[in-house]
Image (tube, rainbow, N blue to C red; front, top):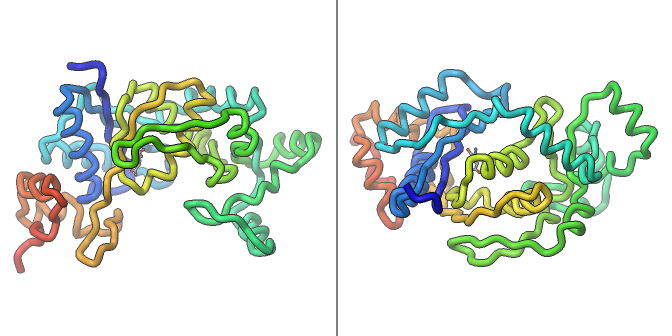
Amino acid sequence: MSESFTTRFAPSPTGRLHLGHAYSALMAFDAAQAASGAFLLRFEDIDTGRVRAEYYDAIEADLGWLGIAWDEAPMRQSDRFEVYRDALDELRSRDLVYPCFCTRKEIAVEIAASASAPHGPDGPLYPGTCRRLDEAARERRLADEPHAWRIDMTRAAALAGPLSWTDAEAGEVEAQPGIHGDVVLARKDVPTSYHLAVTVDDAAQGITDIVRGSDLFPATHIHRLLQHLLDLPVPRYRHHGLIADESGKRLAKRDDARSLAALREAGVTAEEICAALRADPPDIARLEPAG
Ligand code: GLU
C-alpha cells in the first residue's frame, strides 16, 4: 500500500446512505484503488441528538454491498471529544476564539434589526455580538451560562495571512475564510463542530487527498485556515459534482426512495448502481425500478 495517498469517506450515522453518498464513497474508493492508496471510513457522529445506533452497521452494510472495503477500523468522532477540546484550548490560549452566549433567536432578532446584514455561503453572518463583550461580562457569564465558541475570524485570518489549497477541479484556490464570519468551532451541546472535528481528524487519519461533494467547497476556506492555525498538513482536495434527480434537485437524506436500501429492495443490483454512478456523467435515471 502506498503511503502517499490516503482518502476517506465520512458519513454521519443519521440516516441510510442514498445515491449521493454512494457516489462520493465510490469516487474516493476508486481514487484510492487507482493510486494503490488507502481508503478510510470515519463516522461523523458529533450530532448526538440525531445519530441513531442502527445506522453505523447499516452504513457499513450498504458500503460492503457496493463492494467498497476500508482499511483500518472506522474512526468515530464521538470517541474523540477530548482531542477536539485540546485543539480548541490551543486556539483559546492564542485568543482566536471567544465564547458566544447567544441563542438562535437572539441572533435572528439582531440580524433582522440591522440595515445591511452581511451574508456568507450559509446565510447571514453572525453579527459579532459576543465578540464585543468586555472581559468582566465574559468571565461572569462563562461561569454559569451555556456557550458555544466562535472563531474571531478577522483576527485569525489576519494572523494567518494569505493561504491557498490545490483543488483537482478548481486548481489553486485562494482561501477566503472571511466570507464565513465568526463560525462556531464548538457548539453549546458538544465540544466541537463539523469544521473543527473534520480538520483535526483528516490530519489524525493521515488523509492526503480529500474527495467530497462540491457542497462542501465553501467549507474548505475555513478548514484551510484551521490547518494553518493548528499547524496541520494540507491535503489535496477534489470537490466533485453532486448527484441530482431528474428535476435537477440534489438528493438529500429525506429522499428515502433513493436510499441504497430501497433500491436493493426494489431489485436493483449493486453492479447496476456502481455502473450508473461510474458513468460519465453519472446516469441514475437508469436505476428507476420498472413499474
Ligand atoms: N459528514 C459530511 C457529510 O456527510 C462529510 C464531511 C466531509 O467529507 O468533509 O456530508
